[in-house]
Image (tube, rainbow, N blue to C red):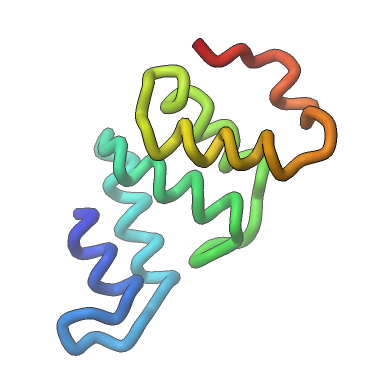
Length: 97
């Protein structure tokens, strides 16, 4: 599913770029349990890319993945910590292992 999502999102294989359609495919991968799909969905919620920006939802998706050791999720959560002056309320209850 994520391969199809990337095709739509990036406009590969002769497709016009369609970020919303690509996001829908990433979300299907997320719902099917794909860590790649979950990480991309969380990232896109954080940035508002392909979906409405919703940082709380993005963090709620990424933190369990980061705690499980998913490298891309760890990087994204680390970037959020780095870019925010002071902890966000949702972070205060979370301790990364």
